[in-house]
Length: 87
Image (cartoon, rainbow, N blue to C red; front, side):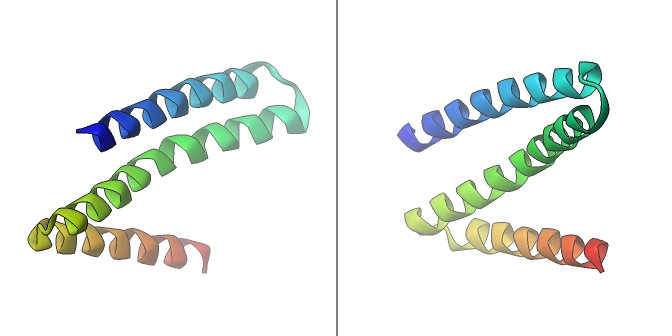
C-alpha cells in the first residue's frame, strides 16, 4: 500500500502542476502562454500512462502475470499510437 500512497502523492503534485500550467496558458501572452498550455496538456495526458506503467511494474513484482501482461500490452498500444501520430 505504500507504493499506492506514493503514486497518489505524485498525482496530487501532477494535478497542481497541470492547474498552474493551465492558468499560465490562459493568462500569459504569446509563446509563454502557448508553451504553458502545451505543458499542461502533456502533464494531463502523461499521468494515466505513468499510472499504467507504475501498476504494471507493481503487478510484475507481486507475481500477477496476467495483469502485468495486460498492462504491458496497453503500454505497447499507447507507444504504437504515439509513434503513428508522430509519423
